Length: 75
Image (cartoon, rainbow, N blue to C red; front, side):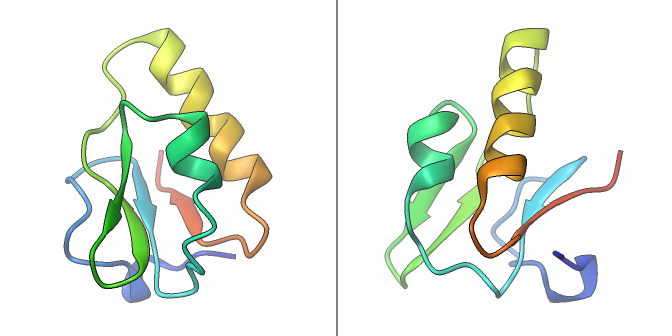
C-alpha cells in the first residue's frame, strides 16, 4: 500500500500520488495518460490531478491495477 511519507516530490499536489515502491511498469501511464507520466529516473508520477469524472475513473482504475500498490489516494 502506498504511503504519502514515501511519495515522490514530482507528484502534482492533490488526491493521487505515486510512492517509491513504483517499478515503472507503465500501467498507470497507459491507463490514465492524461494524469500519469514516466520520470527519466525510472518511476512514474502524477503530473496532473484528475479534472473531471472520466480522469478520476481512470486514475482509480490505475490505482486498483498497480501491481505493487505504489499509487496512493488521499481523497
